[in-house]
Image 1 (cartoon, helix red, strand yellow):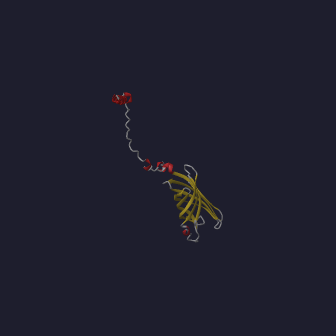
Image 2 (cartoon, rainbow, N blue to C red):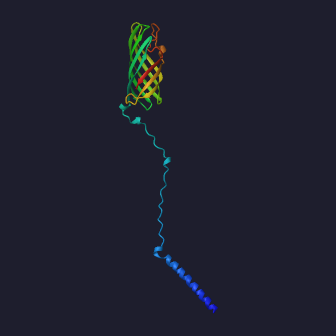
Image 3 (cartoon, rainbow, N blue to C red):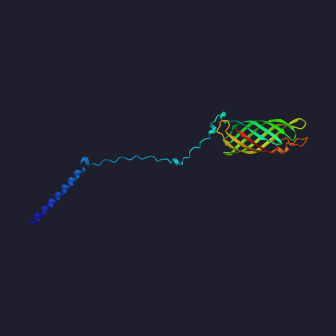
Length: 216
């Protein structure tokens, strides 16, 4: 009797296990339980390191300027009073060769009066110059000036004056007059400008140092 009861229990347990397994298999193969396929991930190309690419240097605006836009017009003047009176006016024209270099020419008219010699006269001539910018407000200048001046016995002669110096500049914002330059020059040839008849210095400046205010 006990044996029959034991076999009946085993049969019931076995039947329950099979029913559970079949139910699970049925659940697995139901259409609504089929797992969806995961989307395929596309491989992205490697991103270039843009930081390693050096930016192109911006070209100077000067290269894009027309000829007339490089021209500067202005002039300079100088005043000296005392035993020797010297009023110096010089219209000038310059050209912007590079960002920092300006070259140009000018004409000079000078009223000269000497109380010591008791005469006054007009000197005239011209000049050529180069002006190079060291820093935004400081320039070095090389100039060559030639002047026709009086000498003894009512004669006249030409004086050649190579000069070097510097200027302190303040921009004006103008198209033709770009800046005001306070200039100091040294006349290298000053001590050689001697009148051969009376051994007097013929330079109308009175010293080897020349000071001007230039608008250019």
